[in-house]
Figure 1 (cartoon, rainbow, N blue to C red):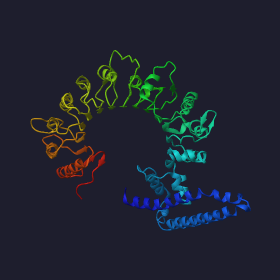
Figure 2 (figure 1 turned 180 degrees about the horizontal axis):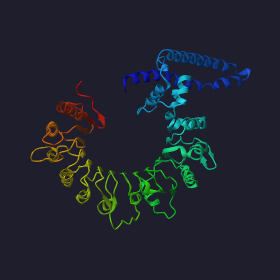
Figure 3 (figure 1 turned 180 degrees about the vertical axis):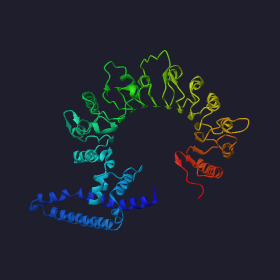
Figure 4 (figure 1 turned 120 degrees about the horizontal axis):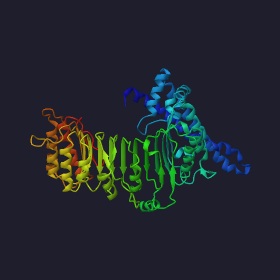
Length: 520
């Protein structure tokens, strides 16, 4: 964080902490109402309540003094800033990509001046995260109205997490009807993006949202939609549900601006205007349903497929390959490649030179050579699983020889001692694979490697750091090792040598944790 802004944020955080503590204390305020409900024969209980009231009163005075001290000292400078500058700072604080981010109601709770600036800054009110605390609040309607009023003509990015189990009352077959009405009836046209995580309680919202899209296009400004099924459904049960003649189905028709769609763990059939989509992510859904969807989305720019489940659906593959003219990013991540998708990749999915990034990570290793041959050589970013050796090493060699324009390569390796891999990646006069490579990432899953293996990888990196003729030297190196204290020590020594060779702080991970810089 920029230092002046960090100073302001620290000062702001001090005052905001006081506000949160004050609100926490005030939540106990109903005790004052209960105080007068007892008869004289409850004198012993009243005496205990008097003690608690005195304690709360002292806490309120303490928090009041703290807030006044903060406002008169820490914020004296920031309050003198022009409103437009203060507004920029507030936007920065509310958009921090960390646990330190603030919401506009917290900003406005510091003082009347900050409240006036925050309430008149529409951009502060364009992100709303509805989580557990929101569902428990008795001021849900007022908070939603405040957001929609203060954002003015701007659109809202909305995230909905499921409410706690057993919360909310059911009105006309729908739980939290007050929230639904404001979001999807009164202000549906204000939604730009929606991430909807639902469990059993919010599942009835989907057909109601479907009715909204069919009744007049109130979701006409919706550009991005993510549906996340929050309750577990057995994959085999999902596959059988897909075979039912009257299977559950949800249709979203009138969403003319929808371009990005994410479906996660959806166990029912869905329908969208597929042809207009440009970004599609399918995760944990029936693999047959996924293929049927993809075959209707030829204008995609980005396609991501993650851990598709088994399918019993009969999918008729097209007789001629479908050409994805605009596809730039393609990802397939799964424990294995199903026979259905293997046939689809080889026979009916065709890509053009628009494809720049390709990811194929499965426990089966590299894809079939026939499929690799069908990929355009325009690919610049390649992520590949080379675990298992044998055919996978052959597939890697084919990739390195064919895709000469690669700038970024990520390999997942089971055995880092496989000298063939290190040999293929090393740069020499005899072997000039990947002359344009700028970024190399190796994810190691093996457990039997020693310093000699580390030295071989260091020599490989060194060979790519030296620029020869018109070749581009390696600029970014990332290594990831498995867990274990012996691996951590070896990885730390490896990082120290790697930093020395590259003359920068390289990224070395042990079980997902980034090792600290090896030198000051």
